[in-house]
Image (cartoon, rainbow, N blue to C red; front, side, top):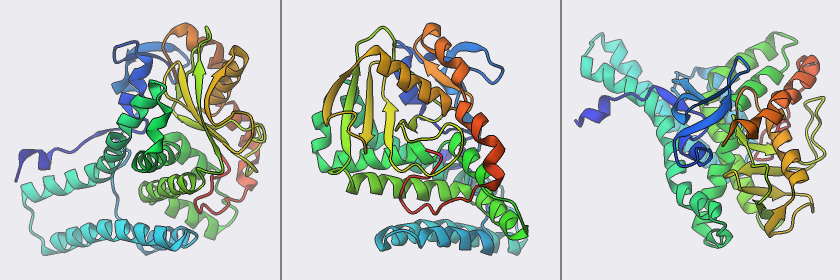
Length: 345
């Protein structure tokens, strides 16, 4: 067995590190806000990362039922994909249980099992990143026609969906917003929190599919920023910037304009609104400031830019939406997540 089969990946980035290097001015060092409110300049390897964030944990009957319950809200073909992925993980769980029951302990088996738990989901995300990488490079170079290729569009939309659902910001927002008014709801919160590693991947799959099938109805646009204010990004790289998104409560927005900065100069947006035309749009400084403000407001800790001056004006907005909405969170019901965008986006 190759040696790398035993190498467990510990440091899991919930925002792709290579994506962040576009703010590094040719290096891997970016400017970003820290948990303590400072602005630091360091490698992308040390931010938007958590040890074992995507590590697989055993699923009990309740947690499996929660997964299947959400899956059943999806179209049939997506349900089949969900079940296929879930069965793969459950088979591994079953095989480990048989091994544990035997009472035998073999060091190589222990190392291999640990590596599988740490690497399987991380490797799935890495696969999506690898496939989307050439598309992102082309878009950063303003080559929007790269998405005329159906395969490229599918890969980019799947990647885009996971950029919403795979983050720590998304996870914490969902779990925090779940009602806890009785024992049943508390059990549901605990089940979702424990099964989140699978649910987040499933939700990303659904969102990506929804964006792909709706590509001819929503307006897909490239935003070009030639102003003195560069685009920034954050620990939640895709955000809903539609005017209907409430800053004071977590409520399901009627529409979505999903915004994703690709570099300090280029961004991609998928609009329900008529704000931007399909294709290439040159934006003014007022628009850039508005978009950066909304990115910061929907970040939890980190906003990232290519200079200290790029992020300093927006630091005061970090987490504003969560702070304003927090008093009402305990009383909000969580809508079904069936491929439509969830309410915190």
